Length: 263
Image 1 (tube, helix red, strand yellow):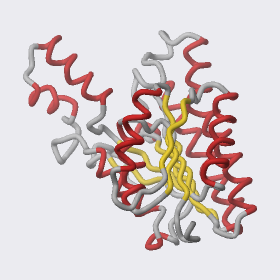
Image 2 (tube, one colour):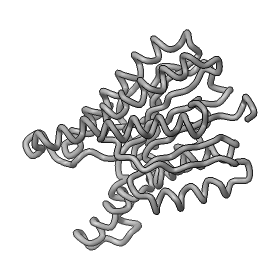
Image 3 (cartoon, helix red, strand yellow):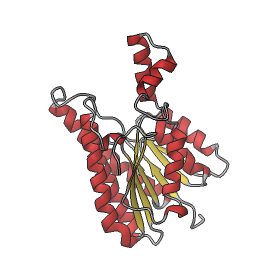
């Protein structure tokens, strides 16, 4: 293997934003491991990754990130398959919708395991490997623009993903001397299955056509649209690339301007 070939693990990447990120890495010639819960979807996605002319190695591993045994197995198998990890992109599923009044203790526990603790477990494993390597590395967390502005029905997700941003800042401090950079990307609404489901629900519940339903979701966005998955993937490819070597310990919001936070 060429020393410059990047070995990448992208979680929750059989579809949606995760797959777009993995696919962008594959186009750069990276060796890629993705995970998801469905073997059939993983197999189809791996085949697409290998369809990139420069991608010679791609694997899919079934894993439920809310289970410690699955996370441990995922990382161990990735090391065995690739011989190391130079780039970890922590993407994850979604927390239950609800408010402080409607979310149960089980809902909070599920959110904690799926979003925050899985990120901690993966980061701990990756940091150990990257510190022992002479190649340095990158850890990127895909969180949500909601870490800046809490929304009533996504409070569990907002809380856990805000915690991930704190973990990222901590790791950026303690890993920098090892040549490992840690950053966070906080996306707004993107064209993914979950957002498309919300659009379809609006079409049924309010009798809107697709264009009007999409506009309803994008109403707070000055650009007047939702994002395309490949746009987020391009940002992450830049973050982990050589042109962004001074970028470390930061959170980049990519939501078309929806956030009213001035930073």
